[in-house]
Image 1 (cartoon, one colour):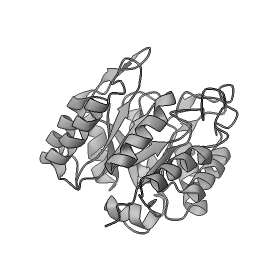
Image 2: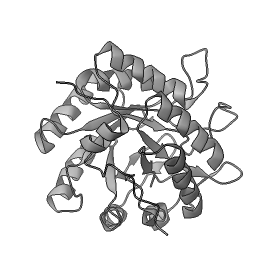
Image 3: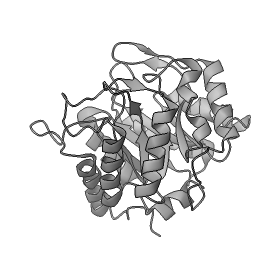
Image 4: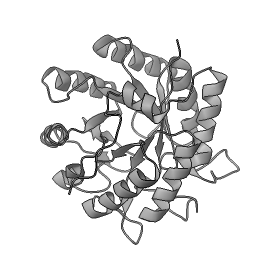
Length: 283
């Protein structure tokens, strides 16, 4: 039986800029164009941040609304996942775009260290973000920077704070957080399966040069894969990635190697128990 692989493309993030790689899409129009190219290459989820005119990260709901509208117009069926990450705002400002009712949103359920700061996710904020996602019928993607975050997802699921089976993404390779370690990765997979079922979907993301490492681990182990310029701006040590689509095509090649079909948007929505047709953006 086939096991389609969902490819998520994280197109921009909060940190990389044109000075790091000219291909990083910053304006909304650039992001929509880059997402469309990645969609045609095989990505069926877009993980999205937005920027101010000067390139600084923001949680501005109006910019998210423009991006959501553009992606839904040019990439019909693609799953839109908006970021509630902590580099783009503070406190409940981070969830200001949730009334737009995207298909998905990222949910960090605990705190951890980042390269130069603490990525703070207080219990009060986590509870509020989760409640807003239920209110607007948004599926959270639990971003697990630590084993405790998978345990927290189980606790929240048992309490009804996460509805439907949790979708967990392992994030590895952030400096001062969880390093890239195959034994840890395998234990993460077993923990998700133990908590949520052997067929529970999960995803993995690697930072920098570890992106392709985590892509291969995820594809070969039956999970789903995240790629994109947010996490990694290079194809290799000598060459910058020319586009998000180029990074998506690397994952498609891995899927071919491991005989995993690339999930269509219809299959991705079925795997994640999402409606087969995206709803119109909220007014």
